[in-house]
Image (cartoon, rainbow, N blue to C red; front, side, top):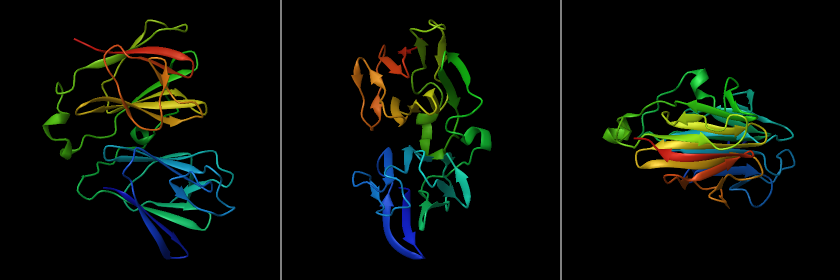
Length: 231
């Protein structure tokens, strides 16, 4: 299991296992990693972990987030990356049991700037993040039923997007973003960005991954869409 090692001035303070899909970092007590320092925003950053992949996102913090000395908004974490939050550092240690296949810069973008606008302000961005040997036979095509989403409202109602990639991001960056992950045992939707959570069949989700069933109706950033199995 991947982990973060929190340190300040070279002194290791604690190790945090990335054992949940969404791990928040900030000054307020409700964060998973609380750093009680005025240089840290109340809700500073979040790490989203899906399978063996972890993504870091700065939550519009006052002082920003650095990775390896570079300011970031969204970043695909690689082994030994160093996250800097003021005087504090978080070193990312990947799960050595899972072979990391580093995607190129375009593939690594969690919400790419080149996403295609399909329905008004809704952006749909299929993003392939590598195929790992530890997926085994479960990752071979055909193991998971083919699926797609169909837009139900807006100017592009009726259009479909096949969920062929490992990750498909949905939403409007800066407002509301979610990701649908194609896993060996089905499809799961996870909240990534925004104060509002995705709605499935009229019920708002929480921060945890939610399994999708055939004909579930999803609402993100005001756009409704139906998830369905194909074939």
